[in-house]
Image 1 (cartoon, rainbow, N blue to C red):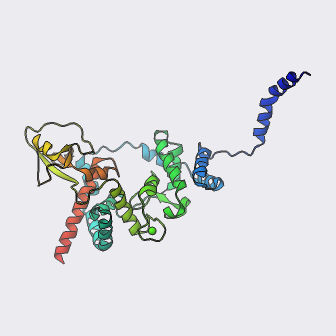
Image 2: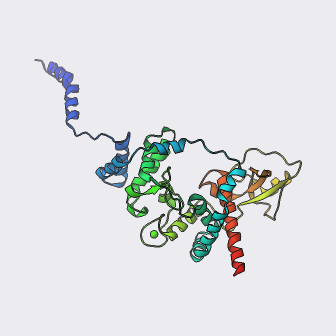
Image 3: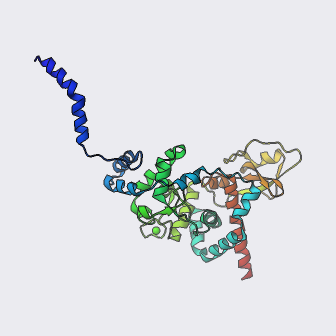
Length: 336
Ligand SMILES: [Ca+2]
């Protein structure tokens, strides 16, 4: 046979040979779609053992209840209905008691990070009722379900799953397959997602471990550090009521980022109830209150709270809970 005929013969067999080689390789079937690609990335970036990573993911389960929770229509309650969920007498009293019990620690962390401690307490109050409801879903199930089976937000949650797998063991409250959290995979008293644990959580008690479930210093300092890194201004205003006059200029949608100096809004017919720096960068927020529309000036620190949760009602609830807690602490101080 001429040489080129042999080559041709071999070429014609080549796909078959390739098929035989591939078929004889061990088969790693993904338990979850896209699992092996993720494992390869994590192993490449961290040097972690792919066999152990696969074993972790193999035992994670798709939970339909997590997808259902994500699909529940976003609650578009007016402020008049949203506020009473968080500003309950119980939550305020518990916050006052928490503040007074842990005052020295709170005030020392507040000073270190330049963040008013009542705002740290209010975040814990709104997120988990001061650590009472940190979530019952397995974090691995939540992030596998949303990262692999929830196309609408898969990109974000796959990234959170990747970060979770990449975190050093001493950044978590326990072994990865035992962690519990919200249906979205948020962990601890402050409900940190894995990217936030990686970027903002701190080991404040110096035991070499970041534990957002069991170490109060770690929990409080991590929230304070989150705020500080997002630009909290120590002593700066958060929000203040505005009184529009009859001819107040109508403004467009509220923006989290302060848009105008306060004096500009005053010139447009919105009067502050209290003395404030006229140059303070401000946005104007309208909420549907119990007795009609409420106008609020919102400032830089309000925007910082919205980095924790984008909703302006969330930020306002944190702001008002923080103030109610501080009022309660001060009146308890006066009684003593
Ligand atoms: Ca620690």
